[in-house]
Image: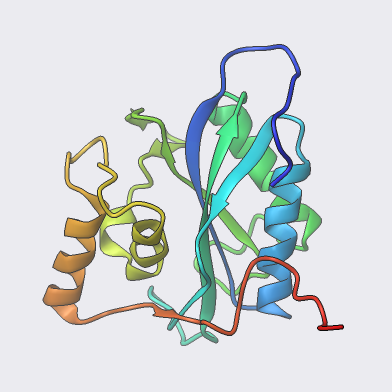
Length: 186
């Protein structure tokens, strides 16, 4: 994406960010999320998954379908600083603090941060519901089905297979949707 960065600082860590949203132009919001990640001086987007669509999973009334994707990033930000940067990006796209489990334009979550296992009041890594969510696992598997989730040791591919077998929930890949802006043919 933006290429190699040269600023000084701590060594870069690899992290995986989950992106999602179900309000407004969902694809444009995901693209804006990727652009915001890559524009941040402490984050470099290395790879992105395809775009997946899924029905809302959670308590409360039904919501419109979500679009989701994952991005592998290199970051010089510590986990809490990365979380703060993601929350700032969400706010810039119109999300307020009251949208947990409610419709939202853009949701950015730290799914993995290297091999770190962290459990605090305000941040859990790996993401606490990672293994339960097809809409996260499907795009994550596209980026590496053999990737191990550090707290369980299971691979992303194995977790995908388990969730498909358990309840059949899947996220459908949208071949018509990409995170790169579409250019008109000449």
